Length: 567
Image (cartoon, rainbow, N blue to C red; front, side, top):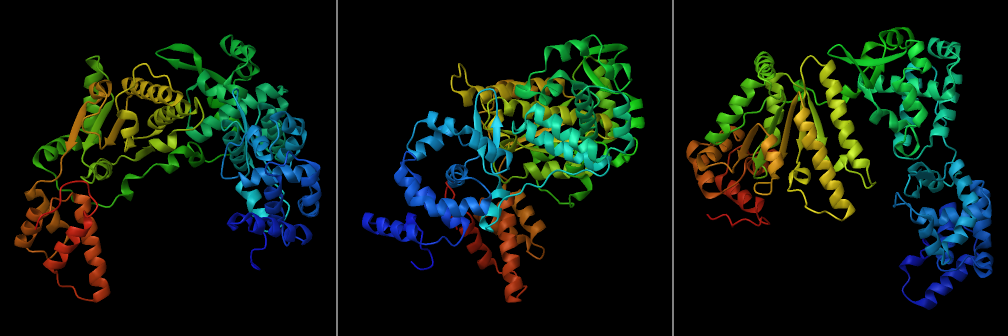
């Protein structure tokens, strides 16, 4: 045990464990992590009593000196770090580990606050709960036996100012920054660019912090998302617990904010009428205050779209029914044809949006079809991975979904061609909604589905969802998808074509043999061809060996729940 003198978790007998602790108690720790490990071992169930403090005092003092903390802060930090894989640590969990009541830890909450101020902890404060996490940078510093010193945000021009503000808003959206802290840190950033035209002009308006931060936030939405339709649902993200102060909302509606007087914001105009609940920056604000930002900086949210010209041309082999539907859809989504179709639908009083569903067996080319549609029609793709949109926090998933559709609308307004909104592997949101849901997670799922259904009604662009669901599709979704393409496993004839397309040099007879013997999907055939290609590279033998291909077919589906492949 010389290499790991304090590795208690690996010990088996109680006597060995006690002996190991005694060796650790009288030994000088070699690093902070070692000291914290010893503290965590002793503090468990100790009720923070004097015996614990006496046994751990050398390690506590060593860590306190190294990390520039006091002894109480070190003990608390040791417990938090031991639980650092959890991104939502409650004080009650810290108390439970230490074997004391939560009220005991609450009495030490001032020390927890200091750990937060020093950056060792990040606190998430929502209306319903208060939790903590240990940033990865803190762990890295401690591994390097160094105190953690947070790097302050810096700005030296308008672009870096809004980059820094965007970082602050990410923390604010995660409830890890209060409105008051956001105002303070934004003012510090403004001081750093005090001589910039933007900062000088804002100072000349003599606005209070509430209106100044409000304008900066609205400018941030415009810069990040090209957002020219900012509603109260967007503005509430600026405030604690997502609640706009009543006086702010009232002054928006009465147009009594200085932002209106200074011609920095205005109501959104629709069909000649000013909307009382939607606002945007004026052209004056965009050119006079944000003019130094290059046009490419505005609407940076489009930067992460999948570009249509990034997809390599790929020949896809379909069964006849799929082939007809995909060809028709490709024709409709061509720019000129699509504009004509939308115009005629609008004149007929029908919805302009195109919602399409690609469903069926996995590996049959659903997602690849979307990529090839994008390439052929010149449309970029805004890809949505549903699991990443979902959040463990109550209400956050719904906000994420709404923000996603808002962002898509803004991109459509500013794009020459409407991109494709791709819900990839959307099984999680297309299933049957639960009646009388009582669990919070079920209610969240239903709420997400209801939001998507409503957004599909209002969609003016192109949405395509892919799913492996074949029978459990909610009827409400089924009605809203204009085109529904079912992807079946390829027929024997289609499989033969896939084999010959992917493996040049394979004879027609051999392709038919493999297609008849192995009921594989297109992606499974592609896997086999890739393995075969690797094998030929390693062996230097370019000859196609049918027997080897048949073996690869057998191993490809070895663990499949489907029926065995017969040869």
